[in-house]
Length: 102
Image 1 (cartoon, rainbow, N blue to C red):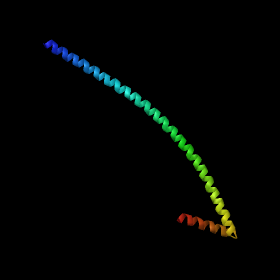
Image 2 (cartoon, one colour):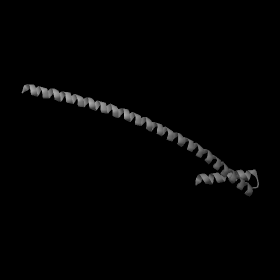
Image 3 (cartoon, helix red, strand yellow):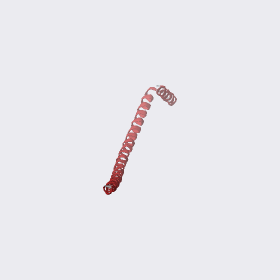
């Protein structure tokens, strides 16, 4: 009977060793897959960032043009209601101050 008990112990140790090795293999495979997922995610993130920068640049240029047109339009309207360059400068400063206050 001692032999059977010894055999059971050896069998249990072998099975535990195989289980441990299987868990290590599964862990390594999972880590490799997580690395691949991380690389894919980083690639997608970089692509989205690139698109956002391009869109922002396009939006910024469009906004600068719109602001410039608005300023030119304002200056032209102020020129219509002022009689001199000094009055135009004063009206422009006053308009600026009103805009800043609001």
